[in-house]
Length: 342
View (tube, rainbow, N blue to C red):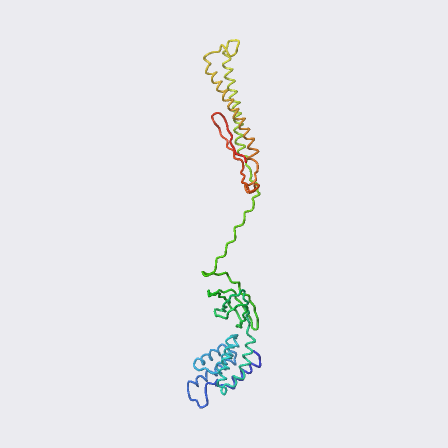
C-alpha cells in the first residue's frame, strides 16, 4: 500500500472513532458494546494484525453494518492480498457513505484512492479462446466468465486452478497457475474436442502399418542331406557284406564239385548253401541300388534344402515361394525320393 493512502486510512480511524455506530446521546448498551469492539479492531490494525482485525469488524458487521465498518473490512482485505474482496468492499463502503454523507465524510474522501490502488495491484489473467464456440471459465471452482476470443480477468495473487466447461459439460481443470501482484499472465485455452449429440466421439484409430518386406534369407538345414547320405553309405556297406557272404557260399559249393565245369558234379547236400548264396547275391544288388539312389538324393538335398533361401515375402512380384520339400522313404524294392521344387 502507498504511504499516503495508508496515512489516509489511519486518518479515517482517528476521526471516525465510533465507526458510525453511535450518535450523541444514544444510551443503547448494545451499540455501546459494538463501539468498544470497533475500537478493539482499530487497535489490532495499528499493530498490523490485519487478519484478527478483520474478524472483529466482521463480527460487528453481522450485527450492524455501516460505511466505516465496511471500509475497515475492505482495508483488512487489501492488507492480506484479498484484492477482489477489497475492491468490492471499498465500492460498497462508498455506496453506503454517499447515502449518508454527513456521518461518513472521511470514507468518501479516502476510499476512492484506496480503490484505485487495489485495482493497480490486482493481477490480470488473459485467456485466449482457441475456437469460435464459447467456453465457461472457472477459477478455483467459481465461474469467472465466458470466452469466445479473449477474456481478461482480475484475480487475487497466489495459486489458482483454471478449469474449462464447454457445451454444458462438466468443467475440466487444465492448468494450475501462480501469479503475483501487478502481473499479467496470458494463457491459450486448449482446443475443443469434436463432439456430437451423444458426447465426445472416440478418436479414429490409425490404420495398421504396412508390413515391411522381409528381405532376410531363411537359413537352410543339412539334416536331410546327412540322413539320406548315411542311409546310402550304410546300404553300400551292406551290399559289400552281402557280396562277401555270397562269395563264401559259392566257394563252399565249388569245393565239392568234381567235374570239369566248376559248377557241375557238385554235392547235392550243399544245395541249401547254394540257395543261400543266391539270396546273398539278390540282397547285395538291392542294397547297392538303394545306396546309389540314396547318395543321389543326398546330393540333390545338399544343393536345395541345405542352401539358404529367400523368405516368401521377399519373392518377386509378391508371389509366395517356399523352400523345396523332399520326402525320403523305402519300399520292398528299394529307396524313393519325392519332392516339390518351386
